[in-house]
Image (cartoon, rainbow, N blue to C red; front, side):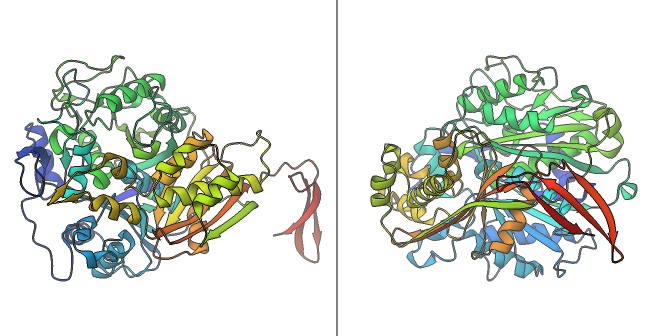
Length: 586
């Protein structure tokens, strides 16, 4: 079972979980108004830390994460120096404020920040960065669960954080997405979101069932799905969120759920989409709540912060009220309340969505609640699938525009894309063409890796928010998330499958395939478009993609015999390469 070993949060409401819980029960909010200045002319409402003093040798972002990790790990006996301990960093923009100085390009990269943090805390294994827009904190839980189940590590330490600086605030201002008052999730008078700062840490381990206490928190299921609708607007029917919920709720007794903790950003389209997804998933009678009215949108920390708070709420038999909610403002009725109320149930669902069409959901329960939650019992633990290669494609040092004109030519949106998305779009198109699609194949998951991420577009956007020329561009800002390339590929092909972006310090196929194979433990996945896409600038780029498929064994003729002291099996296994007998020894 995937068990929580320890958890820790730091927010403007308190320096630990206990302090934050007391503040929530008292109905306190960390949101306050910040007046405009030369750096950000428009006022905004946010939840921000007062102490902005970095540790020597670290940025502010790194400082917050290092301190939180040290505090969390001090409660455990986890050996950070063990190669079997994995550090996962969840963030959307990390050290992005460093781009305000021309010499800081390298330091602004998330893999660089993750390495600095890991070194300070004592991790020796190479960190994995999840940068999947607003779902990063939940996506990090999902990949941690899979890698633990796959045996790739013994302990997964996840940390999430983001600094709400001029880059992010101005971007949301350019979209007119920020509310001039504390946000009001799902309310009829909601005007938009508030930004927030927080750091959250969760330590997970895979331990035998008999070593898990009845009161321990267990991560049972997780799913990531793309709605294939628009890079900055959610599906009007909540398709991606619905499919993520549908995946984790199969055979679940939803009456055993204490609540659904929604994303609840208080933007018109997101709240409406979530209401539809929750209703379509049959959860309309389950209480729904959100924490954005207390903390704002904490970006890379949100999924972890809100999961930990939900665990604490269930521990204290409470459904936390949705602060700011008064009158329902979504078309489908949900069980929402601004007031706290009691619950005796011991399981919940956490739901998030984000730019690039990504959506994620996880199912958490205390071990003692599992029999009621899963009346048919827990499904067998998935094994690592064997993948076979369908096609490969590599691309570098050429004109992407010329390739588009000569090989595609029917998707004018290409010209609006940033260099990373153009690269991923062209490479995926040519890979799929090489695979000779018949139109009958199942849609693949899209799992990509990069080092520079959206750096090329980050620099372009930074140039629009200089103090002497403050004209933040929403058309550029939307591409300053590394995962947008996965969204563009899903939208182009209409794929409602998993879409994930991970950042690594270099292209390492062994490392990438370990993540991909773990992701393909998802029972609903049969194919994956995966690989490396990196565009540090418009003149330097590289794509190295593979289309892989699970080897599904259909044993139509199975024999077993003893030969020279070993067991030998012969099976007739049909696949796309023909049905030839194969031999294996055990």
